[in-house]
Image (cartoon, rainbow, N blue to C red):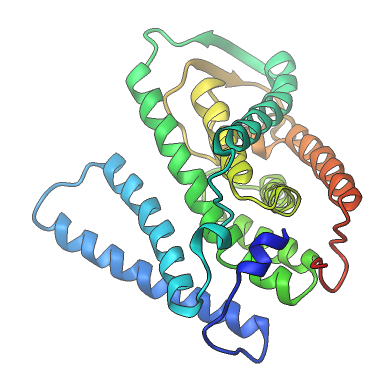
Length: 290
């Protein structure tokens, strides 16, 4: 992750990284509230479809993150956010394939042993699936830009990387506390997913893989396999009805509310921990920079 960390050039000297994180967070909130206010004004004149509002909100989130860095840093945005152009397709497809694999492995036991209905949708909602494919590309990238890359490198650069993993993952899981069907297992799994995304950034020194993994996890879970995505029901290629204990099925929260997702995420994190360690990155060290 040295490229990202080396790219950080603060305009103002801060006495401690926690103050930097707080200032960035407040600035982000103020900018985003301003964007939302603009949308409210527009909505008072024209009707904004829900799907347009969702797309716009996530685009605003990314824009606010970029603006915060532009205000407080002299950093080059492509390096600061891990968006180098070299090998984009390969990096993104690697992350997307990994995300699809992990959610399929998590969902497979549920589909084999805990489903009462499993069938292909008739008719297949092609248009809706395509819209959500694009939506999840934007949503996954936006959340990673905001949660992982606006704050995570600051903590990793000036403190122990483990704090970056824990704090950003805790914040990521807290963002879903009000989602339908949320329970203890789903919150733990969301925390683990955040840790996994963080390890992706540490290991690859890039945000492309984490963005793709995040997007694939949601799209395949919801629009391909037919499960709820963090408690939200969406049109899918398949119709699935689960039957069994919430611990095994994830109930109304989706696959990521199940014990199987916890196991898969735990194994994936363990593998990434070994890989990052072999790469010379010690997440418990005071710094990972050479």
